[in-house]
Image (cartoon, rainbow, N blue to C red; front, side, top):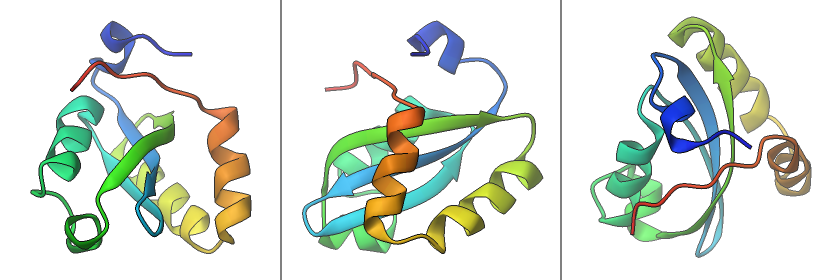
Length: 96
C-alpha cells in the first residue's frame, strides 16, 4: 500500500471512488488534493451529485497519457469488475 509520501511523487494515478450511488473513476497527478476536491463538492459533476464515501484504489502511471488509457479501460468495466480492480491497488489517505 503506497504511503502519502510515495503518493506525492510526480506520477499520475487512475483512481476509483465509492460514491453514494455507484462508483467514479478518474485520473490525477495529486491524489490527496483531488480526493479532497471530490469530498468538498469541487470535483466532477457526478461526485457533486453523489459524494464519495471512500477511495477504493489508485494505480500509479508514469505519465498522463498512460493514466488516461487505463482510465478509459477501467470505465468500460462493470461496477463489480471496477471494485475487484481497486482491491489490487489499495490506498490510504489522511485528508479529512
